[in-house]
Length: 601
Image (cartoon, rainbow, N blue to C red; front, top):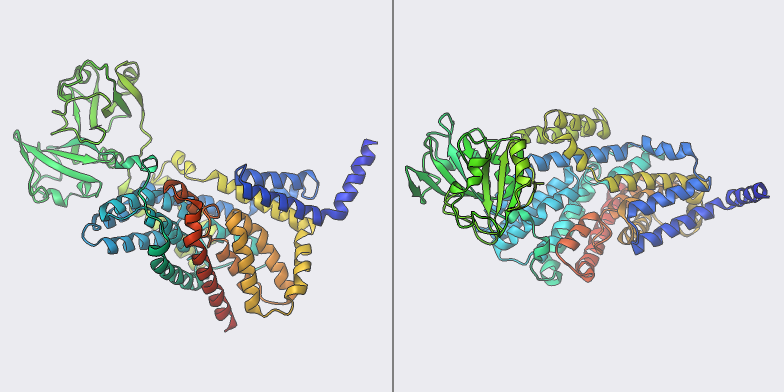
């Protein structure tokens, strides 16, 4: 009886599997819209449903893991992480922010242009993550509303990602699906002419409509970066330092914009004027304030020793590093840091201290301890272990902040440039170039292996693999052919330019309500099949899908960068609709006209 029921069910599924595939897809769309589960979970459920019903077999499921797109995307995540770890992006952005007080409007244009260019060659999601606190600093420096900058930042990074094949995961997925369907692979810069026109139209629309439609407001303190917290420390010029005899203004270690020289102690007196012109001398104590990342980066310099320690204390570059908060019961409250017994009892070094809304001082040894002060301490593993047992220190734990590895920045930049060059010249595929570059940056320690794997967005990769499996299931079920067959009668007499507009409109509407990567996987084989049935070139239609699946401006859920700034800026949903809807129409119309014009020649 049970076997008969199974046979009947199998026969029913086999006879109606094309419709069943569309039903599964429809359920997934509804789930994507309501967002009760993460997109990756919904996609995985869809793939498992195809597998459970027997529409997708194990060979079909495993075939998606041979697709080069997810591997390329993972490698590009690591390359992006290396650029962040080496301080490349931060250095460019900080230079622009430093100029903001002199020419604020030009600084904003430069920062947006820098984000645009960076997004063309690395994943735009980490670009936005890095830029959010920088934008907050820029808004403060220029006395502008940060809410007028965060949405444009996301839009600019989206348009930057459209410039090259590696700029966004969507482009790589569309290319991979198109190749699986028998199309010629896309070159890395093949879509650039269309993207340039789209970006010009988008930039013009933002410049005109932004002042009218973008909201006002400041960044909520909940979303402000801890990078804004300054620590006080001091650097001692070593006897054999190559800084001796050079003006402090010429030392690369002291140039970052988030590091400020407060004074120079020499022979018991403080020098507070013309600090950049002052020539470094052995034994100078340079009092500085810096954020956590810059503070940790200075630990690696051989020009200075950092912080204060007792007799036979460790160097600032000791093996263990922790943060600790001073408890209100600490017996040394009110005493100078240089006098606390802590330094004489343990082989530790205090390399920085910070206080809420106030910078301690006048220098590190003479800063008097207060309750809730945070100190950054380094030392041997044994000494740090004893700190955990101290009841007068709260929240003792390893810092999550990582120092920049600026000396390896040229390697990371050259690795990314090599990926672009090798792919552009068709010497090797993008996937091979990206994997080789990843091997180089790991071998040269531009980024540690643990941090490299942490920079890969697992949700994105699971979503892509699962949606590729759903795509295979739809194709094997005949759902794609069914959709194409239903569309052909309505479009068989349409001119090529009209097909481009229809495909773009369909894709962009779907992108605004579900994830862009899912749209790329689902729509691409449909438009390729449609082009085959109509006897037209599929390439312009696939390019239209590529752009429409990325150019998501009207909602905060259609693209990852929109979601990031939506949370960080505490926007309302309607804030995106007001500015994003007209921008979507303008960029879409320009893109479709450009595709139609260039393919008509």
